[in-house]
Length: 163
Ligand SMILES: NC(=O)c1ccc[n+]([C@@H]2O[C@H](COP(=O)([O-])OP(=O)(O)OC[C@H]3O[C@@H](n4cnc5c(N)ncnc54)[C@H](OP(=O)(O)O)[C@@H]3O)[C@@H](O)[C@H]2O)c1
Image (tube, rainbow, N blue to C red; front, side):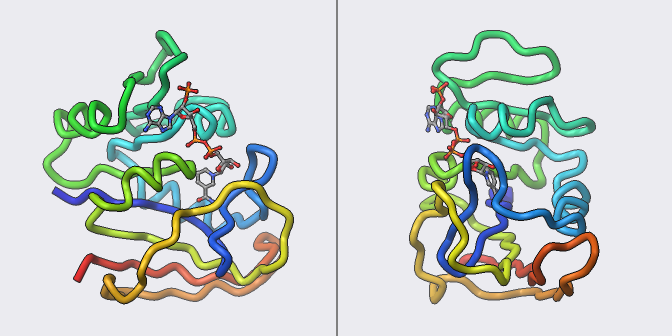
């Protein structure tokens, strides 16, 4: 089973500001959609509220101690419970999609990272991906996207597996 973290961050590991993304990158949103399609996705309550709705054609699992029932979503009280639930839906891949608490708690147990490295530094922000040692990860793919009308910054999507 693959357990991955799917994230867009800059070199300072910034991932969010004011419960939103710090950038507008249409091609990265498209990549997010394509990569996560038909897979179970696990997110924290803030990330769910930031997205504002369950994402279609994916098993949406929200980790929260506060939320009760939510249409078209599953609510779990812990990340472990969320992963066990995800395993009921697939033998292939479960994806952690954030935010910082989910990424931090998941970091010791994920075996794949899919990172969009955004070329934008010194931005305002308040949420960060956890520190990690890149030397523990083997880069297996890399794809560049240029800045354009629909991508505020250039970015590179890299996939890594744990060495
Ligand atoms: N750049 C990216 O790729 C990316 C991806 C995702 C999110 N983001 C950004 O990140 C920000 C949101 O992230 P965040 O760190 O503020 O919040 P978050 O991790 O999405 O949600 C935090 C909440 O989720 C619940 N939760 C998370 N982990 C838990 C655990 N292990 N056990 C129990 N409950 C847990 C708790 O909800 P309760 O309080 O209900 O218990 C907690 O208050 C936004 O700015 C968003 O745009 C960026």
